[in-house]
Image 1 (cartoon, rainbow, N blue to C red):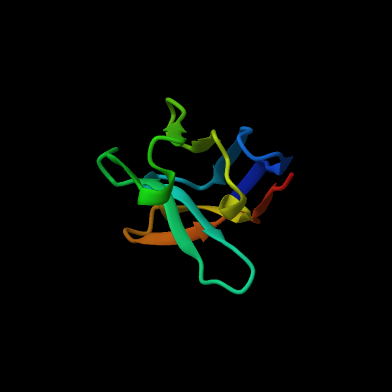
Image 2 (cartoon, rainbow, N blue to C red; image 1 turned 30 degrees about the vertical axis):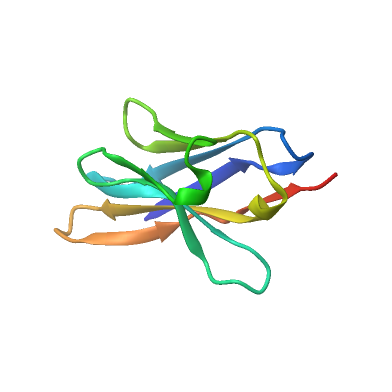
Length: 120
């Protein structure tokens, strides 16, 4: 059994900052891709930032230079530092991870979601 628990998020004015955290726990042998998606009302879920299986970071163009993704040394936690937030960053943010629980295959797990609202 694997659990992904998120924290952070909230209400912030344009130009402000927020930090999201996500911790994976349970039976974890290895983690591949790990990162963040977001979904705004009426829109499809879209990737925001992620680490691939070898630790390279990728960002969607609209957040480059403003958001920073990081992981803890154990690799079971992922963070998203969001700076210079814009109105269009308002969305529910979801962490995810591809996790091998010892069965030889990777399964995608999602966090519960964290609401980020940017408003003046």
